[in-house]
Length: 432
Image 1 (cartoon, helix red, strand yellow):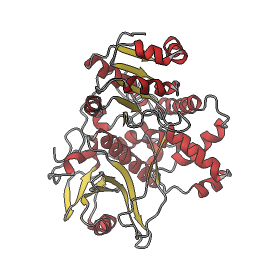
Image 2 (cartoon, helix red, strand yellow):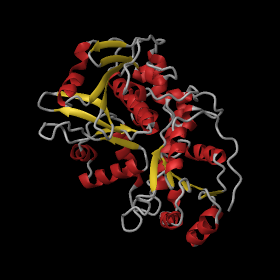
Image 3 (cartoon, one colour):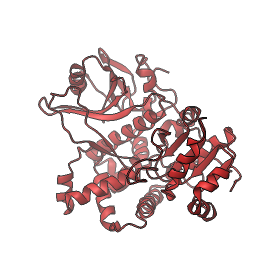
């Protein structure tokens, strides 16, 4: 079962790699999870080489899968560690054998699992056999800084320091619309020659095949109607950033609310859709309980909306929604790289009719807030939601930002800045 380490690894750095190394230094089992084709195998293989893993199982290989299916306890016990198991979700009961293996040893970094569906959740009657033994790391599609060759997490700095005044190159609408219709999935963003994104029609075909492949793989053995699921996904994904109301979606789709919720859960488990829960700074405040819905990759959102760079020039509403999804993708990916756990939420006060698009929270309660504006100029009037959240947060809101398409970092008020979108998308971001 010992395999030669992965060859022909992509050279682009991943922002999650230092975090993955840190987790392997401190946990018995690390689960690297994320959507299909986002680069988990490549990253895990590179880490396995660096850390000199002795055994690699690839469950997409019928021989490896057969061995671990028939007698996983014996096979794992005989394998020399550390062990990498790629595509571990293909054998749901494997986590029980991994639990038994690591319970016999105290050292960290014994097993690295990768998977494009939620590993371990659902075994043992719904429990997680690896609870208390494993930590999870989500790998997202490429960020724009990763595609540029140098991952960069800006808000780890902004949590502690003010952004520095800086001016960025202008980001034209044509460039922005290309970015939003391409996204960060490696097969689409890098193209067939790993150098540049393919033409729009080829990207559309590739994204269509991607969604079909993900849904087909994750429906294996189930009785779910794939065509209805695909229709529900396109409906939900075509309106990124929406406040999710399952009953309204069910009415529009002529489906039962329970069916739509089941489809949504499946799309989340497949890493196609993400939800940002509602933040309640104070228990007594009137704040929406509905989450906001984002697509895991902005290119998938553009595909679901059947748009193109040319169409976006004539549809500012959709362009603004995709811009918000792009920012959500960038922040979620960078949040996953952080050594401190970060949750992405949103805030909306129905009584005051103010909201904030995205809020990042740490376990200590501290927060950063982001409002997204599809405009090349902003002023303090665009920060009403941010100011209202600061009042509600009792000093826990560290800094607030309006992400816009202009060029300059500008301080608009105390702890409120306007930040160019390119500051999130380039390696030399503000404050670096």
